[in-house]
Image (cartoon, rainbow, N blue to C red; front, side):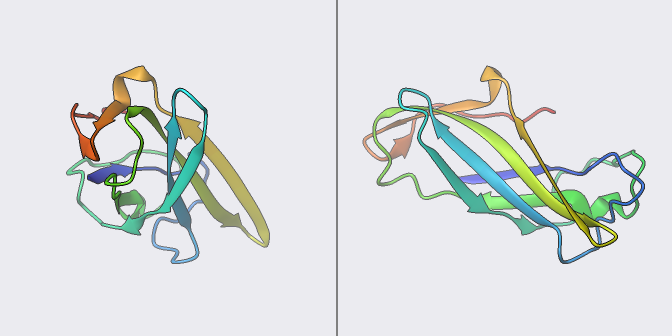
Length: 119
C-alpha cells in the first residue's frame, strides 16, 4: 500500500528543504494498540497542495511511504505521523494521530478498505 501526505511544523524554524527532517508514518493496530513506524521518503509535490504556514520551503513537506501488509493480521488499522526537525541545535519532535476516517482494514494480507488522508 502506498500512502502519500504531508507534515510540517507551523514554526518559522521549520525548513522543508532540510534533509535532516524525518517523517515516520505510524500504523496502529486498533484491537491491540500495537504500533509500527515506517520511515517516509520526501516526495515534493506528490500531494498537489500548496502549503501555507510559518515555516519555509513547505513544498518539501510532502512524503510517501510504502507499507507491505501481506503479513498483517486481519484487523482495522489507524494512521498517524511523527515529525523530527531541528530548531537551531534543538531537536523538535511532534506527532499526530489521524481521526477514524483515515483507517484501513486488512483481510488475508490485503487491504480491503480504502483510506483517504484529507488533512
